[in-house]
Image 1 (cartoon, rainbow, N blue to C red):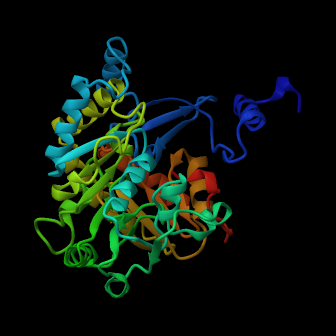
Image 2 (image 1 turned 90 degrees about the vertical axis):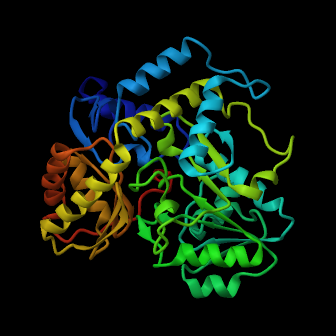
Length: 412
């Protein structure tokens, strides 16, 4: 094929392959622009985006509140280092503590950095053991990867951080492992990278009870579930059978709080807020005014527009619609709000996601038999109707194709 006959997609894909690190997966498409819940590639093809940058683009693409804030803050003050404070940093910290009920905040640039700060928090207890769950995901830095319960992902990088144990996701396993030498338990309220998998009923309540009994920290990874995605500001606020939720000692947040701008944070509660002392944590870019102003505007718009309630309502609408398709391939629908996982009766998630993309729908094959949905919080009737039509067609596979897990670099 000559250069003259190449498509723009082929051209950009080949150029990326030539200069990008081999960890970068082959792109599914080369996207050029977005608006609301839709994106267009360099060839002009339109897609309904039901992944939102893996639960990042809370307001969809090119939302006026996001665009205007980035432009105005960039023209005012973008970065000052953490030797100085700025108004956006203070106001975002105040908003996060108000929405979560937390006490203190430290900012970083990503969810993995928030997890690293949480690991320091755990180490400062002076206790040697940290508990996490099998088939969990907390990031790709060496510390966060040590917490991640996916051995195939961490195997090439051993030895990692010592003292971390991965438990089966049962209350019985947690009861057996908990002791007075445990520093912290890290839990995703919903396992996002596993394909949006719910915890067993009552698990978070039991986790709170057991950690409190033994003086350990309960640290919840709300990186995918936060910012209103599950129909409450944070998933711990509607945990199981406790109407008041399960109050943790710390949460990590990122993704949706920035609406597309890189930012993460560790939010601490009560006594845990006094563990980190001056000089024990820092970051050059964390809390810079451009990132914090944008995140504050995103959360402000979610609040102003009632998008937390919209996530709750639209999530139920999606559940009912997917069940109404009547596909024999669908076995279960887990998750909450606008973070949903569709279980499949065969290992064909990759084929379903590929077919969906060819039809103009972006979804994610999070595992061989689970499809992850995480659309923007702004979706309404029109987007849901389009999704159900396209997803029904994607589920109607013409043959019995096999599917392989997503490429390692394709998850968050």
